[in-house]
Image 1: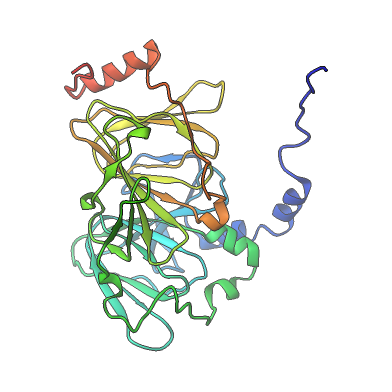
Image 2 (image 1 turned 180 degrees about the vertical axis):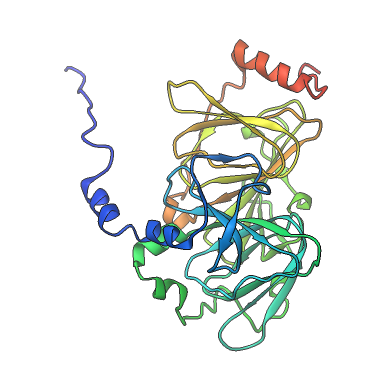
Length: 353
């Protein structure tokens, strides 16, 4: 029996095109924010990305619309010295990573006491869904910069009613107990019986200091920890790999936004059968591999590389499991190996040691 000939009828379903042309609720919302947007898959340093006044947030910001993934989007916010954001609430989830500065956050529901906590560079936390919140910069000299990932695209697109998304009185009592003054001081619960480890917590004061467990399947010396924050269906994970090493090439579904925490290096990304594109990174870089695109991270620095990856909600991404593929052959072709030797040598790192 002859092999069937496989053809692709279309790239985008006609109904999807119709919905985007006629409604585009999320795109319209982004346009109305009046701040810059960054497309593609990478920014070299989110601490330096241009920002503009964001009236809705009462601060300066830009939106990172990476990889046209539609399951989540990131944004960068800058709060000036002695500044505060506007009071907000929304029906989508949000994970925040503090890049620089020190400040505090207040969170509350319509009635009852406010819960507050302080944070600084390296702090990571999630805004409980539909809870009122405001961020404060207590410094009179230094700005604050943070990057956050939200599930805004599918939520705004699904409801197409901004009043429902941003001015909804429903209280999600199972997500946030405002009567608990220690909600954001909950003791860390490390669940190491799960592969890759899971840290169940409501607030991380310094993401660089959490415990990690071995994840050798991703590469020799690799360590990992998945993070569950404040009942969110979005999640994060921290990965660390040694000096003079690189992670195995892998690919997965949409939505991962990788925030580099230390060291220097580069990432190669490519579609099946195509030449790789190189992205050089350091602390503050943000990388978002498109769905199904191979990518491989190389540490060229003199210290182990560590990053935190923020992930889309498992409710929207289809990330129930089994959606990660990797190349088990851990050897580089000679051209790639020579490039890695050259880049490491620039920092005095000997990859043959």
